Length: 156
Image 1 (tube, helix red, strand yellow):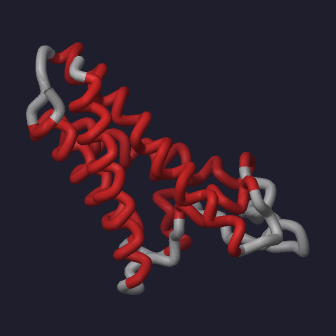
Image 2 (cartoon, rainbow, N blue to C red; image 1 turned 60 degrees about the horizontal axis):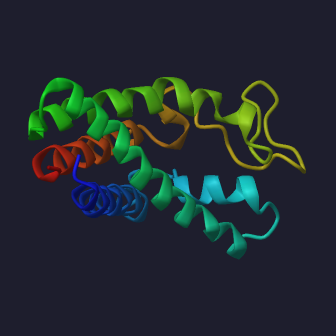
């Protein structure tokens, strides 16, 4: 594994993923804001301070590229289509496992069966994050597939 290649392309792929997700929200395709959700896990009650979630998301995505690199290594090399396949699996895991379990981990997110309260004010994403809009799963899948394609095409 080339550390410099992972560092550069892992960062680029994470930035592209973040741009796609932020653009989806900005264009009104989804109400989901992953960096904000992460930030409110650490800095509840202070909306501007919750921006720490952007940096946590950026570092997480950058480090997660190591999982892709390990998979490429196990498969005997990186290709754009292998990256796309890993990205699709990654997105499906996020949508089917991580998003529905997020309320149990997030101190400010309402539980699906209880609804919002004074403490828990964020809406739970639900299965496939459909509570944030029907186009949400599409934007998550597109973002993660692009992330994988970038890594597969450029990591050496």
